[in-house]
Image (cartoon, rainbow, N blue to C red; front, top):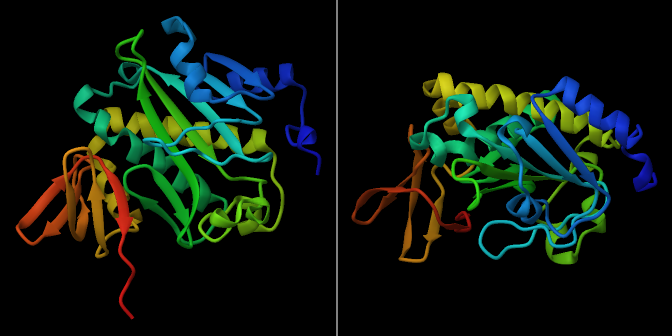
Length: 269
C-alpha cells in the first residue's frame, strides 16, 4: 500500500474528524518534519487551542528519551500533544506519573485491538512479546510553564522487516502482530479517546491507576540496572508504587527510582 493512501481521507476532512471525535482543540498535520516534539517546543499556542496535535506522516529526526532517536519509517504513527495538565485537574505532584499513564492508554488500546502480551516497560515504553511497539517522550515547554509536550511513536503499518538489522529483532508493529494494515486515522482517533479517559482518571481518580501499572509492568521480578546522571543502581524490581516510582530491591534495601535508563539483565536458564 502506498503511504499516501494510509490516511483514507483528505487533510481537511481528517482535521475536522479529529476535532469532532476527540478532545483536541487544534490540529496541524505535516507530510514530513524533523521532530514533532521539536516543533511543539517552538510553537506558540493559546490555551483555547490546547490540547493541540502535531502529527507528521514522516519524522526525519524523531527523538526518544535522552539522546535516543525514534526510528519511524512510513506507516508509523508519530505525533505530539501540547497539553495543559490543569485542564484535566492533574496536579504537579502527579506529573511524574504521566509517562506511565500515557503508556497505560496505549496498552489498553492495543489490548482492545486483540493484541496479546502487551506490557509496560517503566517508565515510558510499550512492548509486545518482549519487542518494543511504542514509546513516549514528555517534555516541558520553557515558554509556557504548565504546558507539556507529549510525544508518542507507535509502530502501525511499518513492518519491522523494513527496519535496520539492529532493530528488527527488538521491535514490532501492529501489522506484524495482526497481519493487516490499518487506517492511521482510525488508530489515532481511538488512541486519543483512550488517552482522554486515562488523563481524566489521573486527575480525578488517581488511585485507580497504580493497579493497572503494576499488572502491565514487564520488569517485575527482573534484575535490572538503572543509570542516571548521578549513579548506577542494580537490583530486582519489586513493582511500581502509587506515585509511579519503580521499586528496586538492592543489596542495601528497597529503593524508589523516579527516572533513569533501564538495562534488563538476561534471565538465567
